[in-house]
Amino acid sequence: RRAMMSQYSTVNNKIHPWFILPRETEIIMSFGCVRAIISQHSALIFDAHKPTIKQQAIRIAEGVQKRDHFTLHDGQIIYRHESKQKRPHFEIRMVEEIIREVCTMYNRRIRLYEPIVNSLMDRVTNEVFSPSGLHKLVPVKDSLQHFEMNVKGAIHCITDLLSNDEDMLDLLLTEKSAAKSKNQELHIKAHENVELLLEEYGRQLNSILLEIAYLLQRVQSKQDMVALSLDAYRNRMIRMNLYLSMGGISLAFGTAVAGFFGMNVINGMEQTEGIFEAIVLGSTLTGGLFLGACASYVDGSRMQRRTLENLNQIEVLNRALSDMPAVSCSARFRRLLSCRVSFKLNIS
Image 1 (cartoon, one colour):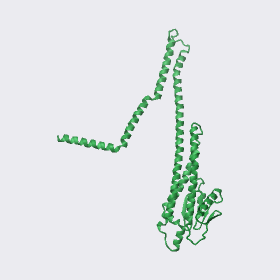
Image 2: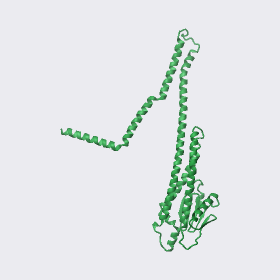
Image 3: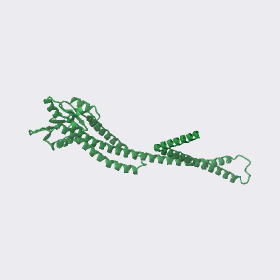
Image 4: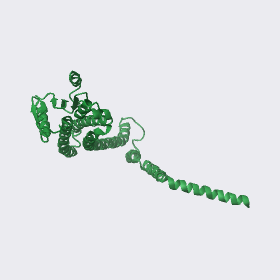
């Protein structure tokens, strides 16, 4: 018990420890929030003074009482044997009720996550360009990842137990005690009921894990969509800034020429007829040609054509590689045909 308490005290409260350790006369169990020491006739649940653990202990006791006569007293579930019939395996039923309580709790939690994620998806879609739109996804994703780690811990605990036949036999405290009193050993197939029990709850936990993965994938997809929307918005802003810069440089040709002729320096062209119209027209055409060349380069029509050609080549190559048996048969047929032609030529 001291070892179990010390191990639990060193573990962060965010991630629960998961283990089912059968011993000679007891089973030490930490599954989710429930920590218990189970014997043949009683089970001691730790921290039963806490409200959440107390409610779980009451539900576990009620689940056990549906089949047998058990009472809850100060966090301790005690079996009361009032008949001479064969005693039921209290330790196995207690392990089952603890695992069932955790699985039921996780099923309720995954049902609570679904409307939260659905509401958040709609809200983020409406606030895609808001600074807080992307940050709202982070707490939900962190909570789901924390939940996923706990479910994986439970699955890992059950998987380790299923892979060890000796540990599953050691869970049968009642049968092991009866066999020991007769100087006998339990048969290896005696743990079949325990194995079926653990496999069933392992499947339930795997189903919960798949639902968590689906919700995480939805959150991740929404994050990717928001990131792509922000990238597209940023690209539009950069494109607009680029167009404004090109327009400013085009106008700069005219302003530079006007600055040159506005220096009040004699240049010999003051009395030339039509020089004003020629200068204005020349500077305007130069700026317009520069703007057209920049716009054509930014539009990238030639680059788009090259990209489409490369994509077509890649698509043709993918089709050829996806049907390799047909390509192999065709190459073999051509090789045989060439061999026959060369053989005929040699004969002739």
